[in-house]
Length: 256
Ligand code: NDP
Image (spheres, rainbow, N blue to C red):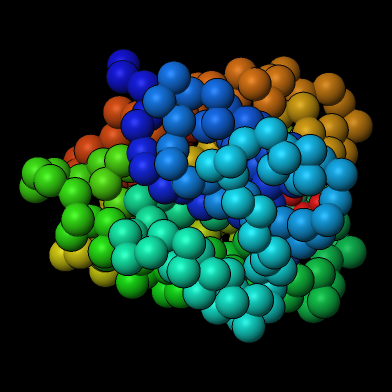
């Protein structure tokens, strides 16, 4: 398996958890990207600032993923930085979870989780499409890859209709529904953006030791480093046959 080589990448929700891990691993690659755009709601936050000062190729971009104006502004500022070249890789990582059961689920909660976990990745795909297209057109060769142009949607096995993973431990109805819908969005994006040469996948990071992963009251089996290291290997190996797939951090196909 080769190492991921990508000129420009954007990660949403990059101030903590898996998003922060992705940024740290990308910056530590032997051939790091020329541009790593790390988006967060609070760009002045301690962790974001510490990272930025150490890496000239890291740009912190303010982004509230539930606000369409914020998404447009982020796309415009990334476009300006890239000065005519495209964005190779968009990683829609930001997400939220709530443990509501069937009985306690609410309209507000369903709406909030769908807005963040499903609708935001749709709007981000739309806003960054011109930059992704530019990257695909500007890369040599005919196949698809994450080095060329790709959208990675951070999904969850919790959204697998077949698996109903950890149902006994936590119903998380809104979360499961929002990720199942994100999987369908990924399929739609893979169909719609294929003609532009943009690869689209849904990725399950494993059960990971982050604020979200720890919230169920058990210690998850995976560290952020193990999950992110695995996912970057998987991404480095993807080609057009994988577009529209639902894979885990080890490259296994996850049932829809
Ligand atoms: P964390 O809760 O640790 O971090 C979530 C990140 O998303 C934070 O950076 C947070 O920013 C950001 N975020 C949330 N809402 C918004 C918003 N409206 N606008 C901008 N940023 C936002 O989660 P993880 O790192 O564990 O999860 C990352 C992704 O992986 C999620 O999509 C999650 O569903 C998925 N996943 C995680 C698993 C796990 O075991 N951890 C398992 C399966 C999937 P802020 O700090 O400002 O809140």
